Image 1: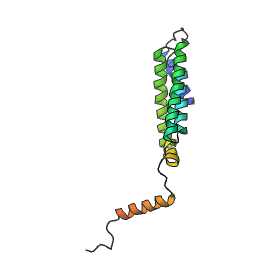
Image 2 (image 1 turned 135 degrees about the vertical axis):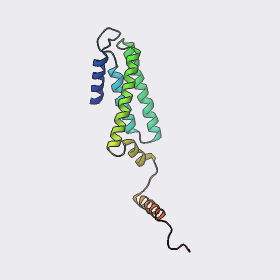
Image 3 (image 1 turned 45 degrees about the vertical axis):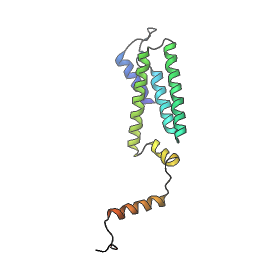
Image 4 (image 1 turned 90 degrees about the vertical axis):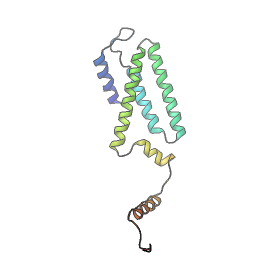
Length: 146
């Protein structure tokens, strides 16, 4: 979240476009940017099954749309400010998820899939599958008549 705050501060400083009510620093909408990052990440982390993932995405989208509409309704942002906040928040969210996933070797999403809604494999099944792959790669066995 700190990175999203820095991103919106730098973008507001760089663009320096006034709001509809003539207050300074309108683009991008920091509310929309941070809501996209926060609820998008929560939906990503808490989704342990397909149903929970879909519910999380729908609830996150409803909250983001409500915040975006309220910012325009209150005459605090233009539509382009809200769209810019959404685009920057989504880009930051996807980048953060990718970076964290590659840094830890596997993302929280894949850990959730393995533990809850993916195929369940015990250590014994994984070892058995590994030994079968090794036997296949080693070539023909001695029981083959030549």
